[in-house]
Amino acid sequence: MSREDYEVVIGLEVHAELSTKTKIFCSCPAEFGGEPNTHTCPICMAMPGTLPVLNEKVVEYAVKAGLATNCEISRDSKNDRKNYFYPDLPKSYQISQFDKPLCEHGYVEIEDNEGNLKKVRLLRIHIEEDAGKLNHDDFTGESLVDLNRAGVPLIEMVSEPDLRSAEEVERYLRKLKSILEYIEVSDCKMQEGSLRADVNVSIHKPGEPFGTRTEMKNMNSFRSITRAIEYEIDRQIDVIEDGGKIEQETLRWDDVSGKTFPMRDKEDAQDYRYFPDPDLVAIKLPEEYIENIKNNLPELPESRKQRYLNEYKISEKDAKIITSSKYLSDLFENAVKVCNNPKAVNNWIISDISRILNEMEIEPIEIPFDANQLGKLVILIDNETISSSIGKKVLEELFENPKDPEEIVKEKGWIQISDEGAIKEVVMKILENNPQSVADYKAGKEKALGFLVGQAMKETKGKANPQMLNKMFKENLK
Image (cartoon, rainbow, N blue to C red):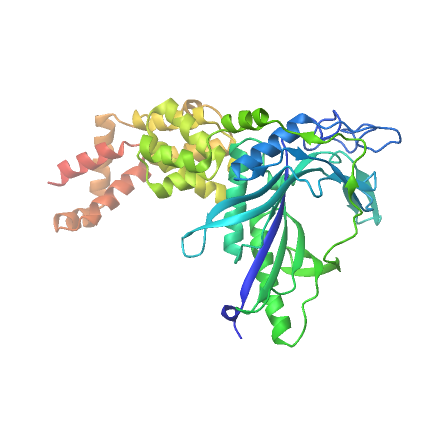
């Protein structure tokens, strides 16, 4: 039987690190990096006698995320201890939330595979602390514990099993990432582990009960998540078709081999022995607190897309691409303020900038130049200081060595040649060296003109004014 004979069911648990200055229960910096165990104190290292104090910003950011994803906000919430042992969990329990999460029953809208709007339900969003990190030394076979990340605040966003394909999962994750970026509660840098997902996958034949699920842990790239889901679907189908049984287990995805490997059995309900944390008071949120956060929510992607359609008159497809990332969207808006040419900025982002991002395999947040520099590049082309072909070279230089585009153009000697005498000299030389193309053009072959202009651009290393070239070639070919 083929994949079409089965229905795929996928649910996600997404962890996002919150962009607070300090950790969730102490005043240690929550920023990424640093020498091992330098962002630590007795509280996040779980020294005896220490007491946690909840960071109010964590609650605010979680409520923001809940409101932006259409959740009900709990007026009465609490923190719980989730007990389990792991070497990078110094307390041997994690402070999380069990039966009273801050946010419940929300949804995120995505497009399904047919292009129809679909609501992916969110069961809950709760706050918790991150664990530390084990650094494994393959040479000595030892593992060292770094507790810089221990106590960094997280929100866990648990979806219902509403997703039906790897493509839907990617759309859902990109939408979630976009929302969190827009409301500025997480930088969502997947390469730093700021956004990661546990992926639950099962298959069944239509009309039959859901199958046994497997879980792939701590995945932090769209490409890996998509590949892992596709592999796991095919693996489960092969097991069932061969008369086997899917075991409920936690899997590890290996990106090199492109396969999943069992880590441990997974029970339906592990005994974490949850109980309310006796050191932390209950979280009581007054109506005015929630309303204040709601009224001050930043503009969300869908709203910004509609504004771009009305204000800048760009296509719906382009507006959707640009507003899918807050960083691209901010780059667009601020560059337009500099050059007052939304169409040109839009074209640069949709074409060349997106292409280079894909080639370099980096996210928009990692673009090394700013909106002012992009706006100045557009002005240089609009003023005919450089040609659009030289503009592409300047853009590549901005990715490599970001500085003022005017400086780049002067240093590289890329200023456009617009002197009529110099242009005519090049045109006459090209006409003299290409008699066949001249004959072809006079015989009605329009493409010959493009060839001649191309030769002139090559002769001038892309610096000749293309409009002047076209005009002068036509005048001399009559």
